[in-house]
Amino acid sequence: MSEDTQKCTIIVFSGDMDKVFAAFIIATTAAAMGMETTMFFTFWGLKAIQKGNPTGTGLFGRMLGIMNRGGIDRLGPSKFNFGGIGRWMFKKMMRDQNVTSLPEMLQMAIDLDVKMLACLMSMDVMEITKDDLIDEVDDVVGAATMLSHAQESQIQYFI
Amino acid sequence: MSEDTQKCTIIVFSGDMDKVFAAFIIATTAAAMGMETTMFFTFWGLKAIQKGNPTGTGLFGRMLGIMNRGGIDRLGPSKFNFGGIGRWMFKKMMRDQNVTSLPEMLQMAIDLDVKMLACLMSMDVMEITKDDLIDEVDDVVGAATMLSHAQESQIQYFI
Amino acid sequence: MSEDTQKCTIIVFSGDMDKVFAAFIIATTAAAMGMETTMFFTFWGLKAIQKGNPTGTGLFGRMLGIMNRGGIDRLGPSKFNFGGIGRWMFKKMMRDQNVTSLPEMLQMAIDLDVKMLACLMSMDVMEITKDDLIDEVDDVVGAATMLSHAQESQIQYFI
Image (cartoon, rainbow over all chains, first blue to last red; front, side, top):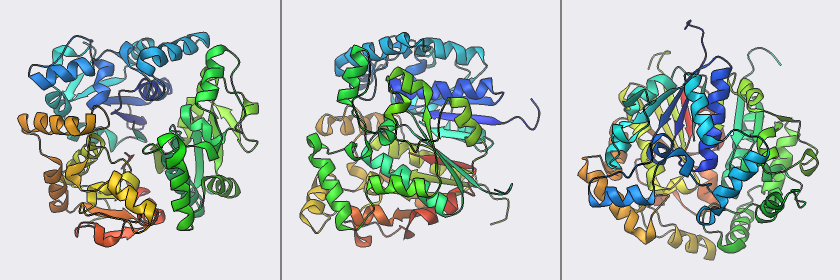
């Protein structure tokens, strides 16, 4: 890409359906506008790029893997989840309006060459391995790599 | 405005009283400093620019309209709300310190020519119409329009 | 510092252990990369730079001081806290991975000359005084001072 290409770097910290959805809307729109776009998934946001298998090796890691099971289709909204009813309701309301679903948004981001980075440190703490992530993840990196993208980015959010 | 005018673009995603308050503090301060300021209200943040009437047409839209009723004076804090007591308590603590209330902050933003944009897609999903929004909303737009403001902005937050 | 020094300004609004941790990771990494880094603590984020003594003078201020007691070692995670068990569990998982603890991160930020600013208005509303904050806080300022840092910053987040 040329020197003048605009860049967009989004930190996806949240694992809430609505916030992850907002992150993907911004990322795919920025990529479609020609911006070089990077998503950095950290902490709860890792759920969006996990395959969805059980994770963890130690006692707490396995407990967390059950309570916080990954997979982009498992995310619940930050409000009104009511044990899964809210997730189902929002999915239905989105379908009724022909709004792209989260798994489709993820695929669209991949097709638009959005760079997918996973945070090494939070993977270590939460006992999530590279094998637990979807194959389309470009790299597992630290905060310094993410920041070197962000400091060249005209658009940058912590979501 | 001249080419050199600095810009500020804030995405208001949250509908929590404290976060919306922070968004308005930043927006009005930036505008008072001479920055061309835009607020983009999306998802729960739409509550801050709703008139407060019941919304929704389908079953789920009407349910959501009741559970998540709009109007800037109805917002509750993200913590310690306790069914409305927290909202009342924070309002009182703000009044005691002569801190501007949220409805006054909204009016101040309007008076300072802060541009108010509403997110088309989340309005569709949540079944909120242009008529449900306060008249001062400048436009209902998509993510691309918001991003074209943000990529020229020295200050940009996702709140 | 030279004209070309890159800057990083982080608004720490959240008082959740995981989000404050992310803020400190970003701040210390940016500072280690040579960026002039500022953290602006506001609302719940003030807990991270409070000494931890009881605060407040009026009835509500004292109540809030009890429910929301400060001190960086008292922060609980945004999810799965379960009355403190989650906090204990995350601390243990971080120790097991040799990840720096929050109090150590705070000390590291201070050692790296990260500028620590506290928000005047939220201190007033929550009845927190300068004496309730750790001595390393550089200044108590308003939003305009924070924004004047942020508008010169290549990296800026609202966390």
